[in-house]
Image 1 (cartoon, rainbow over the protein chains, first blue to last red):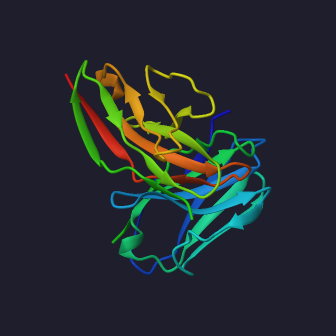
Image 2: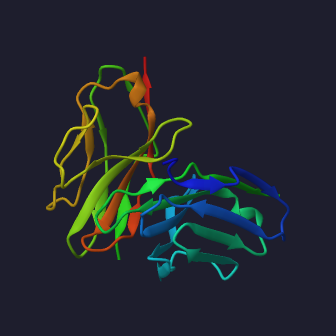
Length: 113
Length: 109
């Protein structure tokens, strides 16, 4: 297994544009997490899904952020419209179940100019 | 609400010296505590978890419920230990993992 796969690895976009980040979890894992990493705040949990259902989205900063998991093998995090303060590294992680280790993707570095 | 605090953003030690990365938490229930590590150009990965009570790469961490701490320790630091370290908390029975702000450890040769 190639692990959790995120795309793109890098994204540079202009303020106001829509940004979509993609994640393919490890096959068989039933939990998926989206995190945002910044120097000031470290790793912030944005949202997590269990069996494709959003369980906790209290970390989503604003209505500009939305996440979907249409099936067990794919999830998206969308920012519309994007702002410079959204610039960060966004990580996706998956886990096989409660109490199990979370496996992280390599992250998407987003720069909004 | 749960909270994980790592008071040091940066920590530098000399090779061979002991190292301790601090982690304090606040949580009303019974938490599970973890340390994750991110080496340069690598993915964030699990280093150790308190329920395993094991030593990984010479690192250990003891959960101190009285002090609500889960400090990571190693008696003799190595250059390859240089990395970003995150302390994380999960409530037992739940799946969401909350991280501290991280500590960047630099081991000076």
